[in-house]
Each structure stands twice: as C-alpha cells, then as structure tokens.
Length: 120
Image 1: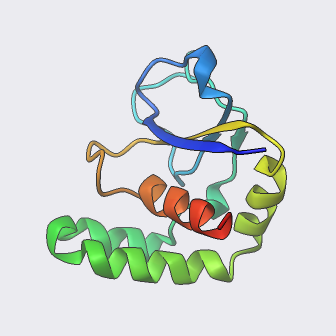
Image 2 (image 1 turned 90 degrees about the horizontal axis):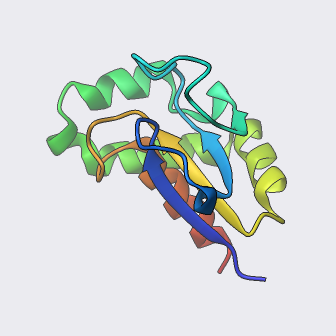
C-alpha cells in the first residue's frame, strides 16, 4: 500500500481528501476556534523545541538549512515522533497541518520529508 503524505496550513479549509489530519505545531493556531479547526491528532511534542523554533524565527531565510538539520536531529530522538509513525502507518492519506504563513519553510515540510524518507 502506498501512502500519501501532504501538508496544509491549519487555516485552509478541511477537505474529505485530507484523510487523517495531524496538527504538528506546539501552539494553537491564532484566531481559530476549537469548533472550526478540524484535526484527528495533535501532539505538541512533535513540534520543534521552543529554543529551536525561536532561533529559526529570528532569521528564517538564513537559518532554514540549519533548522532542517537540527529539527531532524530532534525528531530522531523523539518518542512522540515514533508514536506518530506508528499511528499513521496504516493510513492511506495523512495531512500534516501547520500554522506558519510560510508554505515552504516550516516544520511540516521537515516532518513530511522525514516521514517519506523512512518509507524508502
């Protein structure tokens, strides 16, 4: 069975094609209510550490490559990430949700890359 892993902003509308929706940020998405934001799993411990997040946000363009490397190292030793892998293992479609404005440089990109690299 091939699995589709995709990413989407938390602010984008939920769709039937999203499959199992996993919110992977530490902080609740600003401006969204618990009634309108739909997700199947939220484990704050999958998100980057507060220190790494703050370091990255100080200069996202310059620090992106360093962020990817450091966050992958955090994920490698993170029990919550192992639990995520086990939880989504048999799900055909998984959508990783994030709240950043930047669609190309965010933690969901790194989690998706890490998950798909483990499948090969």
